[in-house]
Amino acid sequence: MKQRTLKQPITVVGVGLHSGQDVTLTLEPRAVDSGIHFLRTDIDNAPLIAADAFLVTDTVMSSNLVVDGVKIGTVEHLLSALAGLGIDNLLIKVSDAEMPIMDGSSAQYVDLLLQAGIEEQDEPKRFMKIVKPVRVTEGDKWAQLEPHAGFSVQFEIDFDHPGIPKDTQRFNFEFSTKGYIEKVGKARTFGFMKDIEYLKSNNLALGGSLDNAIVLDDTQILNEEGLRYKDEFVRHKILDAIGDLYLAKYSLIGKFSAFKSGHALNNKLIRAVYEDPSAFEIVTNYDIDKIDIDYSL
Ligand SMILES: [Zn+2]
Image 1 (tube, rainbow, N blue to C red):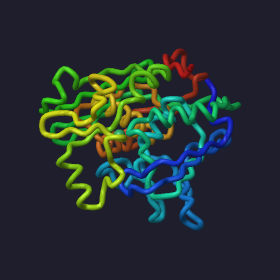
Image 2: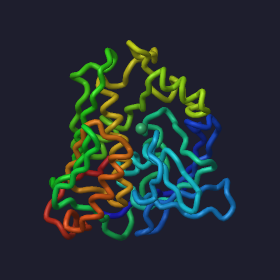
Image 3: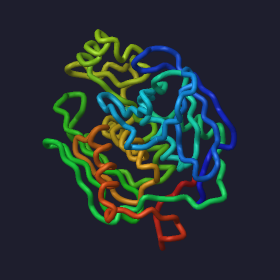
Image 4: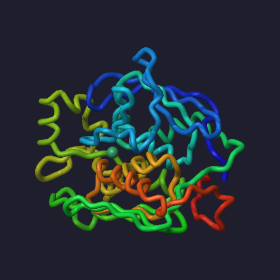
C-alpha cells in the first residue's frame, strides 16, 4: 500500500460557515513523507500549519489549528475526506481563517479530490497501529481506541428530540473508501434553530443555512428535502471523528468507539495515545501480516 497525493492541483470557492464570506481553496500535490499542511494565502509570510492534533487550540464549534497566532478553522470535513480516500501528502491553500463549509458534509470534497485524481507515490503508506486500549472521558461522554485488524468507527449520540428517533442514534462503520463515500461522506452537519439564532446574533454561523446544514426546531427537521440517511446525525459524527482522528497524522489501524464525543474529546484521545508510547506503533503494510483496510474506489 503506497502513499498518496493528488495528480494535479485543483481549486474551489465556497462559503465560510462563520464569516459568510467566499473562501478560495486550492489543493496541491506534495512529495512523499510531506504530510498534510494548511497555508493561509491572505496573510504575508504565513506559517505552514500541519494537520496535527497538538496544534488544535480551540474546539468550540469545530477543530481549529493555530501556529504563531495564525488560525485555520473547521478543518475536520476536508481531513475526513482525505482520510476517506487515503491521501497522505497535500498542501491546502486557503484564502481565509476557515475552510469553506460546502454542503455541510464531505461529499463535495470527495468529488473535488476525485476530479483532481489520486496519485500513488513511491513510498509505503504509514499507519498508526493501536496496540493497547486508550480511553478518555468527560462527564458521561467517552471516546476510546483499541486494537482491531482494520479501522472501524462506532458512535452513539444521545438526543432527546422527536426529529432524532432513538433507534437512529448509533452507527458502526467498518472503514473502506467505498464505504466512506457511500455511507459516511454525504452526512451533513446539523444544528438547532435556537442555537443558530444565538450564534448569528454573536456574528457566528453567518454562512450557515439550510443549504449546508440540517436544521431542527423544537419538534422537527426544517429542511424540505429531509434527510440523506435516516441516521444522518450519527453518521455525521462519524465523519467528524474520522477527520479529527486524522490529526494523528497517520491512518489508524484500530477501533474507535465513542458516546456523545465531539471535537474536544476526539482531540484529547489522540493526545492521550501519543502520551503513552506503549499504546501504538507506526507501521507500514510491509511490517504487518494483514490489515483489512481497502482504499480502492
Ligand atoms: Zn462536522
